Image 1 (tube, rainbow, N blue to C red):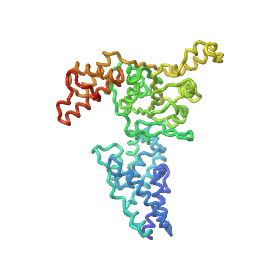
Image 2 (cartoon, rainbow, N blue to C red):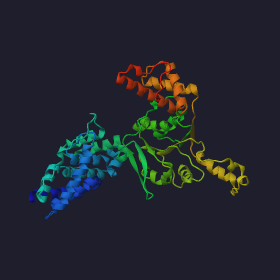
Image 3 (tube, rainbow, N blue to C red):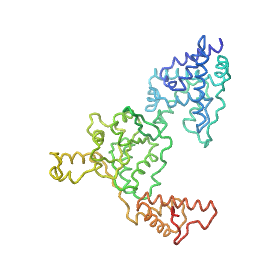
Length: 471
């Protein structure tokens, strides 16, 4: 083991020398790899520990590569290291995403260059030599990880994939420090570079974390028919926001099924290339507002905190935390964060007639009843922009259904679509944007099924044919 041990000694020394990029190895796979290197470099390796570490590392890499949508750059371990490198938040990556490489300090550049060379030495120890040397110590025959196969891919290569290929194909990783800086400048860093949508995940201990949403709702503004006038102020406010100008918190209120939530989600498709990020927060977790915005301050991205279906009953007190978050907290809201909320209530907090009649009306002992009312109303006042979305009348509803049908290529006479849309609304959820979309989805499914079966008798017919979704 003299020869192999010297290789692992060198790898261990390379890992120990990391400074700026030390976090690249700070994950489950990195720690397991380090444990293997330490064990193989030891004068008396522990066979059981080596076997366990190799088995766990094999499983971690198998999960990453086998479920990936792109082929690995290099072997599984090299691919993992390069992905970690491009995701790692560190002084170099955070600086490079905001300024040209010429504005980065020479000491930081020099250490990053040295770290890249050290990481390359770590990456050179692939699965085959590790499996061979672990087998020698343990007397087993471990399977090398060169035979992993990713999921079927679309053929398109992401910016991250192209950069990983660039590293995998060069003989000197340190020479690519400028290319790496340009990658961060173009694509961002860490979780905010990798994902556009997030949700705040609350833990039982009062803490929480941001979780990236790999496949957010792909709805686009062009998919939304009708309510262009209502959406205009939301769009204008968002354009100001992503341009770095002052912008307001927004309350979209009104009847259910009118496209309030869809409007907010569609903003992501419209503006994510300009740095917009959407973070979904439930009203129950608004008390964690300070912790949610802590990692957002100072980022180049622009963040909308999205609270869907926001309203409070009289006994609920989370609205007081929200009031402080919007205005009134000692710590100001970061310039790159706004809050968009949807609600069926204009004033958000339930208000009773007894609140206005006074304490004698129902035995309430609240002496300053006017102040109580004002406290409830002041929450909605802290949204600078109020946008109403009200149920459409019949003509508007039918117009929405007709335009949606045309957009999806449904070849039926307009009057037939309107007749069936009217009947659908009577059988289902009344007249709204959501009802129109559900009607068109059902109609599309019926037509597709009829075409697939080749049964022309089941195709939509004029007259008193069955309605979509009815049997």
